[in-house]
Structures are given as structure tokens and as C-alpha cells.
Length: 261
Image (cartoon, rainbow, N blue to C red; front, side):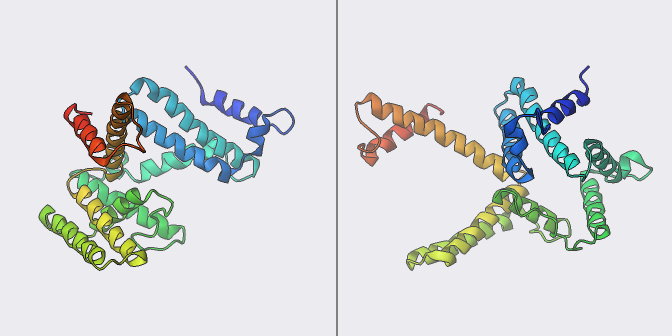
């Protein structure tokens, strides 16, 4: 059975000032952060594509990011990898009293409510803001951040009581966008109204149990497949994308839809 110490030793050697890898030695928390995000998305991509044979490797790549950050933290005298493990272990126990103590949780809603209450207590203990939305990371992708904000607000009852009202809010926000477009207005005002419409759509996704990030990624993959068909069809006719009339592009697009692409 593999031991995490093997990976930790490898990372330590890569960062050795005398015999390590020049590239690894040049890295910092800031330069590695984009790779951490990229590896997390590759894990999600493997899952969404059903490529579970690739998942092991992708999870390993993501684990490497944790080990890399922990090694740099060790060098800076901040914390060790074991401190990371202890912190998440303690957090899981603390936030699951219905599993690790005598406290009971009737259902998933009760679990979520308890989780948020513990998180708020933790924020206050660290001297942070007690605001309900204070710890929603600003660096999250916008759709994910919007989902987290609306989900958090819903825990205290800031919520439309039924899906029909959420759907009506989408129409309301799109109506405001239409008004600006009819007046020929753009700029920050249009950006704000489009943002409101997107937020309303995210809220609708949450109400019906759809992850907006996953939905949009799925749409992106579908668009990519269909557009590739359009491109290939145009080339098969001896044309080019830039020279093809819109009617031909639309015809090939509809053909892609008919084929289930």
C-alpha cells in the first residue's frame, strides 16, 4: 500500500535548494495557484465525461498541488502537511456532530443548517465578520459564487417560496435588459442588468437542483461538437467558415442537432 510520505519526500527533493528542479524552485503560492485551479477542473472534467479510468491520475495531480503548497508552507515556517490533515480532520468532526457525537439530524436540511451555523461560529472565533455572506470567496467562478451566495441566503429564509416566482423573476430581469436594448443603451447599465438576469438564472438552477456551472459546461461541450460538425461540413463542400453564408452555417447546425450531436 502506498504511503503519502513517498510523495512528500519526492516534493521535498524537487524543492531542494542544491539538487532540486529549477522550475519547482522558482514557484511560489501565487504561481502555483492557477495550476491548482486547473487540476481541480480536470478532476471535474473526468467525472463529467464519465472517464473514471482517468480519475485516479487526475486526483493524483490535484493531490500534488496540496503537497506542493504544503512544502512551500513548510519552507516558510508556516505549517506542515500533517497540519493540513489535522485541520481538515478536526473540521469534519466539528461540522458533523450528528455522526461523531450524540447530536441528531433529521434530514439533509438539518445537516446543512448545522453546517452553516458551525461555519459562522468559526468565522467569529477567528475574528472575522459574522455576516452570513462574509466568507464566500471572491475568487470563485462567477456562476459558482452566485450559486453559493443565493444558497447561503436561502438558509435564513431569503428565498422565493416556489419555482414559479423564481422563473417570473428571470422574465422580469430579462424585461429590463430588453428595455435597455430597445433604447440602444449599453455600457455599465446594460452590464448590470445582464448580471441581474444571470443571477436570477443561477437562482432558478438552484431551485430546481441544477448546478449552473455544470449546466453551462455541458452546453459548451455541446456547442463545440455541433460547431465542429458545421466546420467539417463547410470544408467538405469546398468552402471556408469565413466565406460561408449564414444560411449554410445554420443549415449545417440544424443537421448537427438532428444527428443528436
